[in-house]
Length: 141
Length: 313
Image (cartoon, rainbow over all chains, first blue to last red; front, side, top):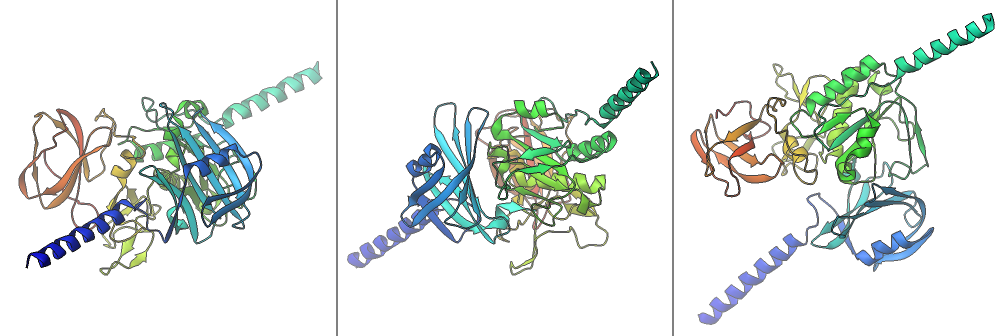
C-alpha cells in the first residue's frame, strides 16, 4: 500500500514539475507556433559585424544577410536593419539597449510585410527566443 | 525701383504663405515625459521594419493649421486619462525618453505598403528605435474626424494593444475588428475596433489573440511595458466609463459600494497592478498590502465587454 502511495505521489510530483516547467518555458503571452532559443553572444556578434552577416544564431537557425542600416538612438539604443537572404524578402530589425546600470537587452523582429507569419525576439528569464507567430499580432492596420 | 518693389512684395507673400502653412506647436500634457509626436510636415524614414524597399519619403500632410489643431485635440481627448503628452513639436519628441516615445506620420498614401488607412508595429512605443506609425489620409477621404480616429487606433497599437474582436459563444472569431454593440440603440465602438462611425472609446474586451484573453485597453496603455501611468491631477482627466480615480484615505483598505458583480483591478498612479478580484453587490472592502493613502485607479468589468453601471465610492 505504501509503495502504491509513494508511486502515486512521485507521479503527481513529476506531473507538477512538467506543468511548471512548461509554464516557465512560455516566453510570451502571444500564441505562437514555434520558438527557437538563441544565445546572447550570437545576438551581440550581429552588432560587431560590419556588412555581411553569416552566422548560426542557434543550431539549425542560420542567418545570412546584409546590414542595410545601423543607427543610434539617444545614446542607449543601437538598431540594426538586416536584409535576410536566408529568408527571401525578410528584414531583421534588432535593437540593443543598455540600461543605466550597464545591463544589455535585445529586442527585434524578423518580418516580411504582408506575410502570414513573422518572428519576434523575446526575452524570458535571461534567455532569448525567436517565436514564430501570426504577423497580424506584430504589425497591424 | 519698381523692380525692387515687386521683389519685396513677392518675398512678403512667400513669407506669409510659409508662416500660414506651419504646423502649430501643440502639447496636450507637458508635464509628461512619455510622448507621442504627430508628424504633419512630412518625414524621411529609414532603418525600420517598414524599409524593405529602402528609404521612405513621406510627403507633408497638407492639412491646414486649423485641421491639425482639431485632430490634435481629438487625439488628446482620447489620452487625457494618461500621463502622456501628445505633441506636434519635434523638439519635445527629441527630448522624450527613447523607450517612451513614438511618432505618427500623417501622409496622403502608403503606396509602399498597400491599401490601408494606416499601419503600425505593435508595442513599438518602447522599442527605442524611432519606428513610426502611419496614417494614410487618402483612404480616409481626408476627413479630420476619420484621421484622428485612425491615428488614435494606430497609437493604441504602438502602445501594445491588439484589435478588439468579436467571438461567438464557442470562442470562434466572428470578426477581428469589432464595430461596437450590435444593439441599435448603442452608439459605442471600441477605438481598437472600427472607430470611425460611432462614438469610440477604450474598452475591456477580447482581443484578436483569442477569445480566452481579455484586453483592458486603459490598463495595458498605463502599465507594463509602457509604464506611462495615469495623470495625478484628476481635475485634468476624464475617466473612461469603466475606470475611476479614487482617493484612498485609510491605509488599510478601500471601501466602496458596488451596484453588481464585477471583476476589478486596482492600480497605483504609475499604472502598476496592486490587486484584482471580484466585487459583490453592496459593500466591499479591497485590501492591497503595498498601498498607502493616495490616489489610485479602479477599473472594473462585468461579463463580456465593459460594465455600464457606475461604482459609487
